[in-house]
Image 1 (cartoon, rainbow, N blue to C red):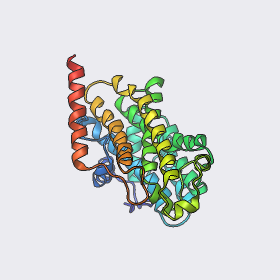
Image 2: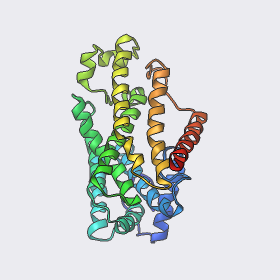
Image 3: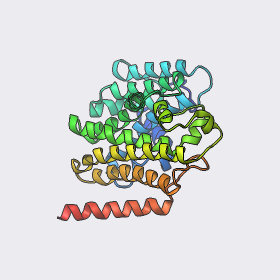
Image 4: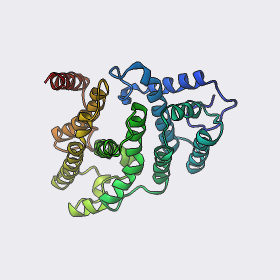
Length: 296
């Protein structure tokens, strides 16, 4: 099998080997993989591991692989084509083809995520908030739709709520990682917002955290929080074990925003984090709330 970052393999694995490969990827990054958590029925976990492996590998091609990343992404999309019209060879795609067939998943969300990584190669600044939302439509929203398809939800209303929540999660991650993204040469803060608050890239390069920066980040954090609240109705439309796991997505994202606020919006000195104790409290409090609502 290919090492992480490659898109070709010496021979096509068996289906069980392919699923095991995806499971290994998901479990090795379990800290970031909340969908396939303890709360989902076991029968769904292998397929969500596949979705995660596809997303992870796609992002690695856009962020880490050596050589011409656009060429690697093109080859990856050609493997995706084989999921629908042929026989893929990469272990992730072998498992993905089976997952796609089981749940009748269209190709659009997979292609959009690949395109998001192409955008990353061409664009490292966003002039307007609408430009950033367009990027999130490719980088974040497709992931939620993939998950909904696996969980058996195909209606437009749930997809709309999921889109809003996933964009909010993406924005929360951006505001948590302003310094990390700067080091990678990327600025996700819309240029129009930086102008509005009088904060420049030179300030960012020097790590300036002053009232201008705090006001700028407060504006971005509040906007992300508003999106979380717009999408929170998604949980109420779900049933069974799905409710808790999906609810924890929003709770986790809101906790990141709270962590930024607790630091008085200083995301440049160090990365705001949600502690393990806080994560456990979120899990237990969310579970208790949903149990009370179910009994009401």
